[in-house]
Length: 170
Image (cartoon, rainbow, N blue to C red; front, side, top):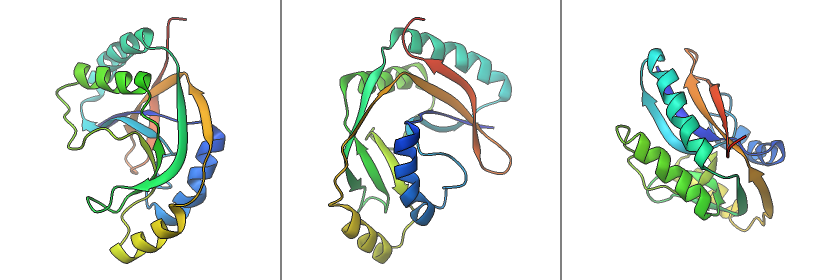
C-alpha cells in the first residue's frame, strides 16, 4: 500500500491550480492540488497507525504557517513539470525537515522545492509552449496553513486522506 504526506491548500488555490491541471496534468483525477511533504512510499496498512502517531507528535510541535505563491515555474530540464512556486518560509522548511528526519527510511530522490504541480508528463514541445505562455502569469496568493494529511492510495490509483493533523497544540 502506498502512503504520502501532503498539505492541501485552500479551495481558491485548488481551483486556480485545477484550471491548469485539467489540461496539463494526467493525475488531475487522482489527487487534488497539494504540496508534498513526504513522497509516496510503500508500507503496510498496519504501519499507518504508527505513522499517524509519529506525525501527530510533529504536528503538535509545529505552528501554523503562511503559504505564499507569486509565480509559475518549472523543473525543466530535469523534468517537464510546471508548478506554482511556494515561498520556502522557515516553518514549512522545518516541518518538511522534521518529517524527513522522523521518516528517514523513506528517502526522496529530489531536494525539497515547495510547489504545487499544475502540469506534468508534457512533451518537450508542449512544455515549452505551455510554460512560455504561463511563466509571466502574476499570482498574489497568501493563506494560513494549519494542517497536513497522511494519504493512502486506493486500488484505482486515486489518493484519499487516512488522517489529518492540525498544527500546534489544541
